[in-house]
Structure formats: structure tokens, C-alpha cells
Length: 122
Image (cartoon, rainbow, N blue to C red; front, top):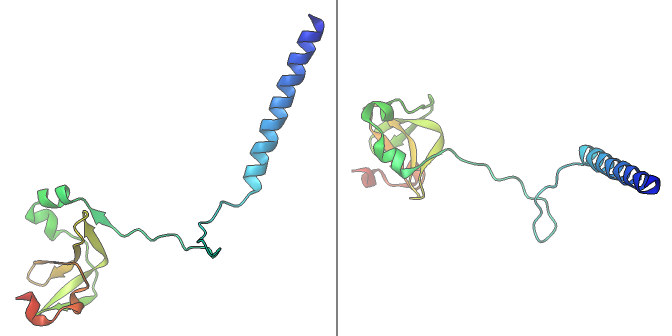
């Protein structure tokens, strides 16, 4: 019985030491970085702001007009618009919110509005 008790204490001590060394080794280690098949380190993907399609469809005019925009201006057709700090993806549709025109219309397109001819906006 005495030998069994000693074995249990030694086993518990071994488990405690193993857990302690495993925890301290992790604390000093650097987190793994994503690597490409060529071995080059990949930059972390930048997540762009997004809104689900169902939420977008449920927004009221007041909520849409409160869209945060910057003082940077762009041109949509013949009208100027205030750009968002980053385009906001709408669900998985491929469309993004690029900003709000001076008249309050939301600028939505798949590509940067400057990509299109001005006549495409009419």
C-alpha cells in the first residue's frame, strides 16, 4: 500500500511538471505565421467591413443615410459622392457600398465607381 501511494505521488508530480513545462514553452514561443507552399510568409488577410444581405434589405432610409462616410470625394456620373473609409461588402453578392452622393443616394457597385464610364450611372 505504501509503495502504491508513492507511485501515485510520483505520477502526479510528473504530470504537474510536464504540464508546467509545456505551458512555459508555449508562453515563450512565437505564434505560427501562415506560409505559402513556396515557404514565403503570407500577410494576414485584411478583412473588409461587410453587412449581410438580409440586414441590408431590412435597413430603413434613416439607417442608410446614417452610413459613416469620410470627407473624401468621388464622382458617380455627373454627381459627387462622399466615400466610405473602406467599401462595405453586401453579403456574398459581390456588390459593395462605396459611399453616399450629395443628394443622399447610396453608391453601390461591384467595382470602384471610377472604373465605370459616367454614362453607366444613368
